[in-house]
Length: 237
Figure 1 (cartoon, rainbow, N blue to C red):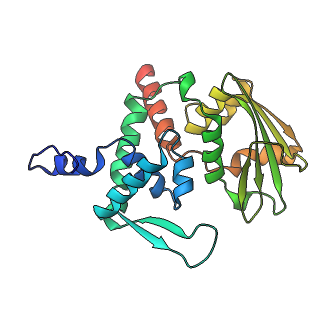
Figure 2: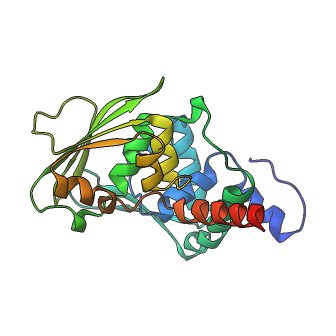
Figure 3: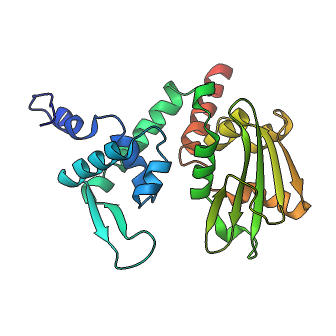
């Protein structure tokens, strides 16, 4: 039986359900539309499959999550938050807002996971803003944890490739991995990444110009930008 705080208090009862490591991150990813076990695992590097299974089972037992079986398709099992689970959106949003203002600085080297960054990008494509034909984006990330990665985007799906996909490259992005992380999370603007941090894009001008509109960027970026603006206003006051 899981240990509890043993206090008759709504906060402790909530923490009995949500206070274990990974639980709120699983909720975070479910809130933005992740539905399948493998997708959850890829978005949470460091969690074991057995621990993820236990956390999902616990959330089901707590009435925060429902598991659905589809009749056919490559991913027949889906996870959906219940009404109680969806109500945690304001909790997660408050934690993001607080963290952006009080606990978020430039990334440390061990926080720079290029594969995870690519997976985040894969999930946040504005496909309606891309050309109707296939678009291939090559990312050349410099730095100790960098490397070369590719996104292959069609109206039907977006794929992350760890090896050259064999198609003509439409846009090449060169940047330090830390710079692109900061851009993705909202710590620097797109213009700052280009003008102050040596990010470079190559390709047809119309595609290069459209590149920033191809992504919805991180769900946390608005909070990080707002926190940055607040800090700047406090300094200038």
